[in-house]
Length: 131
Image (tube, rainbow, N blue to C red):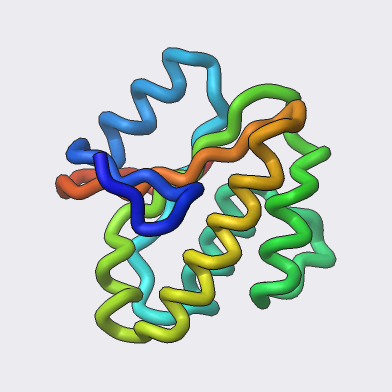
């Protein structure tokens, strides 16, 4: 495993395998990506994690929602970002900004009732959504 940011973990597994493993642990799992534009990824994350209607699809709103998650049941939350390299290639600055927010959110949420983990698969194979 390698980490692109302190709170993000890169794993040599497919998104489907990561999701299945997390579900076996009883985690809430959301799979997103790939996305060529930051706003596209932010929209996918909002839908997959069932963000409230006020979610503004910007970085501040992303951080606010990721560090709340009170609408989800208590327990582990795993966000699988499949194809992160697509955004990294298409929009390096946007990618860096999203990674910064995700890293901060995972660190803040690590101590709460809904610990957030962001996993970046390195093998292909995914399905998007929340379960």
